[in-house]
Length: 119
Image (cartoon, rainbow, N blue to C red; front, side, top):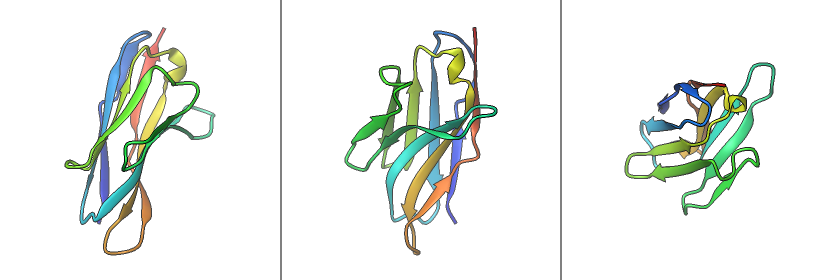
């Protein structure tokens, strides 16, 4: 059984920073890619950032230059450093990972962590 556990959300003023973490645990053979999504009230879930096993990254236009995704494969952990936060960044943030265990590749999701940016 695989679990993704997120941490690091909270309340921050506009212009502030937060760092999200997501650790995968279980009988993991490999992980690729790892990503962060977010869902604001009344809106569809959107991909914020993704990172592949070779370190290639991609960001939503709305967060380019402000957010940085990284991963520590020794810890099966993905991070999202969020700087210059705006009220529009307020959402529940979810991590996802495509993981191969003893069964074929499958996408797993974390439980979500709330990020609230006040103006």
